[in-house]
Amino acid sequence: MSSLRNAIPSRAHKERAQPSSRKKFGLLEKHKDYVQRAKAFHKKEETLRKLREKAANRNEDEFYFKMVRTKTVGGVHRPESEANKYSQEELMLMKTQDMGYILQKVQSERKKIERLTASLHSIDNQPANKHVLFAEDREEAKELQSRYSKSEIPLTTINIPVGIKRKTARSYRELEARKNRLSQLEKIYMDMAMKKELQKKGRKRKLTEDEIVCPTTKPVYKWRAERKR
Image 1: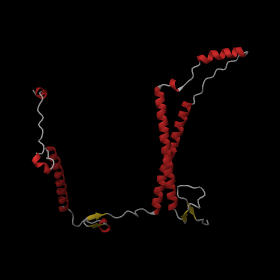
Image 2: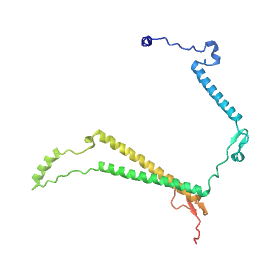
Image 3: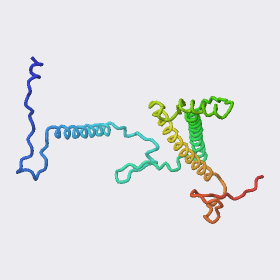
Image 4: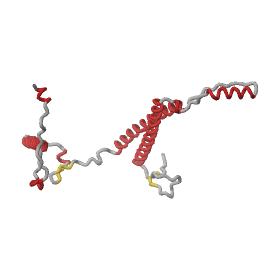
């Protein structure tokens, strides 16, 4: 009976719209809107209940040192500043580890580009087969030339299958993307190396445009010469 009941088309009961006399009050709330509003209200209510329960059951003798180092401003908790969390030696060690990871990625990308370039080079530059014929005189040479020039079919891109063309085009796009990625990684590595050198000890100054021999967009620094003992 249930299948027969579902086979008969039933009328779709629609909720009424806002009457024209009550247009000034906005859209009329539907049942799905009420359900969504009720779920949000009960969720907030449950959160407040848990917080009240936690506050009622808290230990008054509880203490930890972060209570001394932090404070509340206008009822809002302000955590301790972590600007000087790490020492200079720890920061240098982290930068060295980051540079090692970037350098590893640069070397990996270079190897992948070399392999991809070699495979594409071997596909594009296939050696053509040659058959050398020798003639006794000019007439025989002309006859051989006319005979084999007609039967020879040059290898063009028209004769290459569509699947190979797509694979080659995909490989070229991958090669271009990897080259762009390599240039970005090299730029990141150079910037990190410069920042690491600037963090080291020693007096240094930034050169002006007139002092730079080879013009460049990047800043150039000069370190003061120190006597090594």
